[in-house]
Image 1: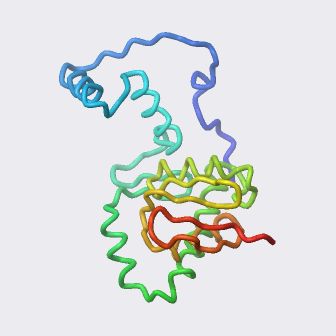
Image 2: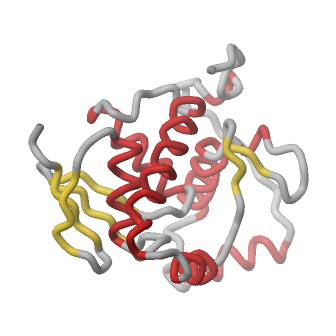
Amino acid sequence: MLDDKPRFHDSLKSEEAKRTTVILERSEREYIEHLIKEGKEQGIKQLISKMLEIYKCLNMDEWQFPGEYYCGISRIAFINVELVNIYTQFVPKEKYHEIGARMGDALKVSIQSTLGVDSSVQDNWADIFKRLKIQGLGDLYLKDRFLLLKAPVITESEIWRGLLEGMLSTELETQTALPPLVFEIKKT
């Protein structure tokens, strides 16, 4: 269910350009300058814009309890990728697709509740892929009838095939089983 409260404060919706002064501690400014100097960030404006985008996409304004962060109905956890992949090593390979499909079904509900979009509609996939990237699951792209997944949090292609099929309500065929993963959308 979607709630009736506005997703963002009205001031965030304004198209009018406004100037704001941000006072940073010396150590914060030095850290940002260090990032810019090393080429990790293009500039302070771009850094703050990126931080705000992540803040909005993860609904961080709704986070209430330390260590318990929710994005809509889904709890967000920061976890090492290595731990996730160690866990998958102990799951029988014949269960990978089924586990992925269940994960996809859960993501479908989460996406519906947080983004308010139907994940089976291909026109919504760009917004969904952006959300998954910000959540750290991987970098998904749609190119013609192919789904490309770069830097997947889980490296097992069969889990991803099940997850994407469950979430996107489509059938896929694995084209490459090692990252970057490529799946072809089957014609229905």
